[in-house]
Amino acid sequence: EETIPAMLECKRLGLAKALGLTGYPLETHYEILQRASAEIPNDGEAIFDQTLTYGHFNLHDQDLFAKSTNEDEEESLVEYCRSKSIAVMAAAPLSMGLLTHNPPPFWHPASDALKEACKDAARAAEENGVDLPTLSTLFALSHESVGCTLIGMGCRRDLDCALAVMKRYESSTSTGEGIVPDSDGAWDGKKIQETGGI
Image (tube, helix red, strand yellow):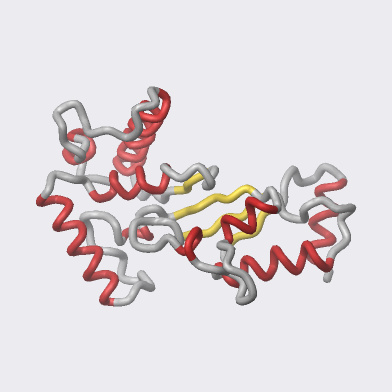
């Protein structure tokens, strides 16, 4: 009753360019977006300009697109946001470390079964000449409904690897060829593999 109207006033005064929402489970995200739109007068304009979720658009979890966020309807959060012209951002394409060749951090909230499945996926990817972090990042970048993908980096090497993947993605989309294997026919990205992956 107080926070969102105060944020709208900041935007009206030019103190904020855009309003966004982040950090909630998908169902709660939807509820806040929907209730704010329905209950707070804003001259017909959207309350929120953007939304950021994390961990719901990666190789093992596509709930951002697949999961209904409303018991009465079957639309996903992305579909709802698209219908309201709310920009969608997704973070954690590597699932906070699960989709790498390293063990996830000790605090990771995933179940033991999911951690084991991701470890198996990393092993299978490596056996087939695929760098799992590269594949995971390319997957996350590939959906046009996600306008921005945020990836966490712990060191300069991670930054260099992420930039290499981004350059590869930009190159493949600008030529219209789609994402293609490296020049040697592999999907691993030699430079990325040599530095230990993302």
